[in-house]
Image (cartoon, rainbow, N blue to C red; front, top):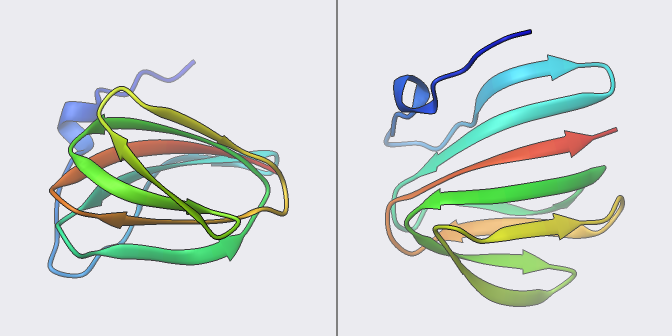
Length: 98
């Protein structure tokens, strides 16, 4: 078992870089802390579950844009393209399943 207090891990930088909370061969859990305008370009990956903790942004899945905000959860299937652009300071985490 591992306990993680997200408040201790949240941090923002001039250039976005995910903070990896945990990684195993079968999954990865990045913490996403983005300033307005920062983005993760659309890309393909394994199955993904995204939970938005605070802020707002635009998530693009398979070319379709949707506004996301605190409390939203998005499920993305393996192989579907996905990306996120922050429209205000945004915090989220994802679970990527291989």
